[in-house]
Amino acid sequence: MRPPRHLGKEAKKIFRQIVKYLQEQDKFNKIDTLLVEQFAVAYESFLKNYQILQQDGEILWSDKGNAYIHPAKSAMAQASNTMQSLAKSLGIGEYNRKLAGFTKIEQQDEFLEFIQGGNDQKAD
Image 1 (cartoon, one colour):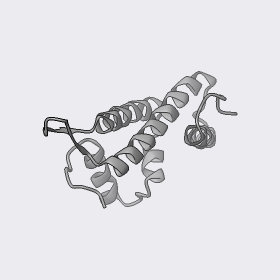
Image 2: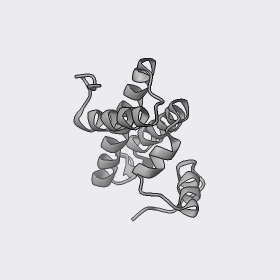
Image 3: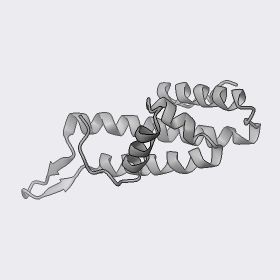
Image 4: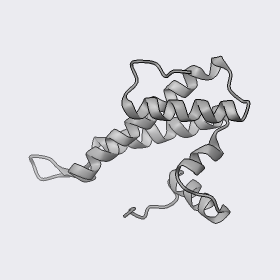
């Protein structure tokens, strides 16, 4: 199945990967296409906002000298929440962990804790 034309490069890539994975698991129905598309859009949004944070930093300063959290940080969190919700709906939680390179149970538990906001350590 081809991804929708309006998706960006990274969204198309993850769309193809998820559809392939679901087909291999014999879990793909055409009705799931919209959910996969939404996941792909959220994934690309997450990546774009991550790049913005890498360039600008997480803390910005107003003209009056007040610090505030970069709006891209909130956009990343929203995209992450969307992906988590859609992953549950699609039954691809294990696939997400595989994409992230986690294979051991301990690593999976650490990853799950991290994406649920339980680990406030800054990643390298």
